[in-house]
Length: 258
Image (cartoon, rainbow, N blue to C red; front, side):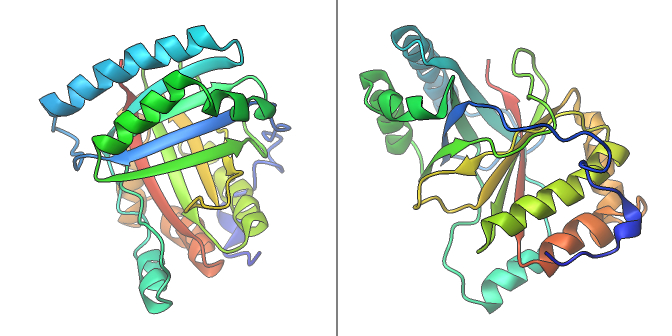
């Protein structure tokens, strides 16, 4: 791991905010249906799909005691991320999918080992088939939590982040996440994060960070002012540490699709 501009923030480890991993297993099903815009509502077609998914997720929870949650997220905005990361992909001719997922189903199992049994359930298979048949692109991730700040509260509405990371070295991206998360906890009131570490070899992404803020205002000004250079650290610390370590970050902001 290359360290850049360490004076901007201390890591969550140094801040005493890092916790051991939880024992949960995750299945993240992410699809691309339509481009999200902050003032644009979901289409009627997408709303109908979400209604069907709600019923299926409820049935999935009812059918297997190992499934403790099944949440649906719809995207509200895709921040630009780091332009340097896109240049790195193009210059090195890396073949992977730039994440633009506007609908996500996150299934949470009480233990990692339960993932295999959940995949065999008919309700799960129907959810996966429904997403595949109603989207332009489908991506599936089986994951565990390698480390965390605190659990993400999905009991109430908020602004949820799934940040999809590309890297050739999983340990490096974990180290950089831990290091740069300290800027978010210090500068953007981030109090939670449960990254998802893919277990399946065919995952396009090395790590998917997952966290939550209460309101859009809690994070959007930081993103705008940071990208403009008015709030120091986002460009010169967070994004710079990503690009210096050949990591591409693809953040997407969501809300719960109640």
